[in-house]
Length: 248
Image (cartoon, rainbow, N blue to C red; front, side, top):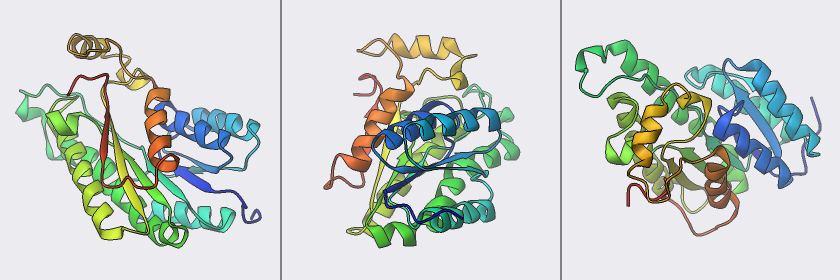
């Protein structure tokens, strides 16, 4: 067990690659002790942790699927044991199934459960386990949702519904736990990560309707996460859309 960290502490779920990785590195640059969480991408997570350590701060690497409530609670317990507290929880872990919105027969119970167990329940498990520690430090939560939850678009109907649920959960929690804990969300449009690497057609179709004419990068979304976590003290219950103007 390491000594209690004198630094603020940020835990980012799903942070081996993409948006989560960008957030971890940004928090590390700001002097935070960081927790890198991953489910399956061990080598990517180790590379992210190594890069964060190179920035000079303590890093905890922890494997856990957020869909597993007991594993999430163990991750939070380990964070507190190692670092002594928690200041920021970024719920970035997510999953989807790519299913045309007209193919209702493909939306089996298993598809719904896969998506909701990670995107909705997994986010809630993390928040519930972390909340007493966030209250103790008057910390905050940033949920990474999607414009799919606002416009009913995206990779599948269950995915859009899960993100709409997360947008609503953000508001419910912000009301319930103010003034001690702020809760906000970032809703990206298409992000140029390997998740969409095989679906470039979706990105191109979205860009045709996007005033800024480019998809987001992970750093674009990290900008918004860091702002909500560290750059404001009077913002809560908000869903900040970062999509190049497409949904305005």
